[in-house]
Image (cartoon, rainbow, N blue to C red; front, side, top):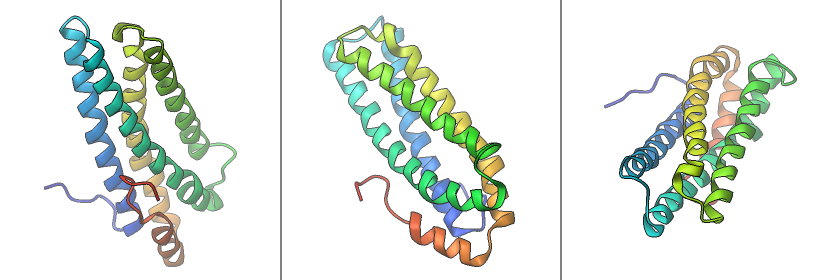
Length: 166
């Protein structure tokens, strides 16, 4: 059983969401690789893959809203938002979104998997590194900077289920 890295409950919520996201994106990424290795995918297989990607994207979106509206905003009071790690992480949110958008547009045009799998791969790789950076740069900064009142407020703001619309 994996243990949490951080002692702050609010950070553990975000860390746990990262684990869920990694589990979800790894499932569709591995399925995408299977379809590529098998020489492509039929309409139903490709549709099922992209449905799974869309479900994962919804979870990612709800998680990113929490980060953007609450976590980054609070940490930004201590380290600034206009440059540095928060700005870089927020730019990655936009970059990830663009890769997913490109894949969905191409799928909507009934293009074969090989035409857009590189966009899904980029989204997967950026997400993986993105969460690594948050957990190894931003979360430790927050744990050092946040006061008890900050932790309590942040926990109240982010303590919701990203599997469901709120």
